[in-house]
Image (tube, rainbow, N blue to C red):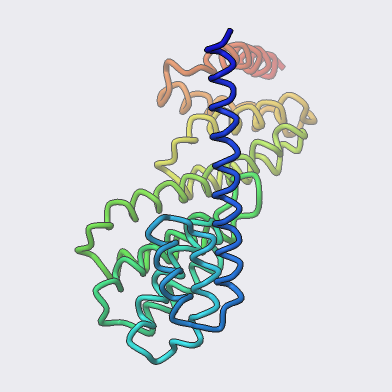
Length: 274
C-alpha cells in the first residue's frame, strides 16, 4: 500500500512538473511572438524548427520573412517556412511558398527539393475519389512538370508513383459514374459512359468491373426493350458477355453472368422461332 501511494505521489509530481514546464514554454513563446527584436525571433524560429515544433516555427517565420527580404537569410527562411507549413498540413500555402522559393532561388541547392515538395503539396490536396477531381488533375500536372524538369532526380520514382496513384483515382471516379447510372437504372447512360471508360482507360484495374456493368446494363436494356429493338440488343449483350468471359474466365461475376446469359439465349431462341 505504501509503495502504491509513493508511486501515485511521484506520478502526480511528474504531471505537475510537466504542466509547469509547458506553461513556461508557452509563456516564452508568447513573449517571443510579441518581441520587437527580429534576431531573437529568427533564432527562436530555427530552434523550434530543429525541434520539429512546426506550428510555432511557421508562425515566427511568417512574422520575420518580410523583414529579411533581400538579405542572405531570406533563402533559408523561405524554405524553412514552407516546410513548416507542409508539416502542419497547410498544403495550400506551403505549395505557394515552395513555388515562390523555386522562382526566387533557381540556383539554390534546395531548389529541386523545393520543386518536388511543391508538387507533393498539390498531391496532398487531392480529395477522395467520390468528390470532384479538379485538384487531382492539378496535382498530376504539377508532378508531371517536376518529372519533365528533373528527369534525373532522386525523387523521380516517388513522383511517378504519386502520378500513378492519382490517375487510378481519376479512373475510379470515372468508373463509379458509369456504375451509378447502372444503379439508378439509367441503362442507356450507363452504356455510353462505361463504353467510353473502357476505351479511354484500356489498362485500368477497374476494367473487369466496368465490363461487367456494361454487360449488365446492356442485358437489362435488352430484356426490357420493345420487340422491334429487343433482338438487336440481346445480341449486343451476348457479344459483350463473350468478350467478358474471354478476358475474365474466372471472374467473381461468373455466376451472375451465367444466369443472365441463359436468359439471353432463351430470349434469342424465342425470336428465332417466330
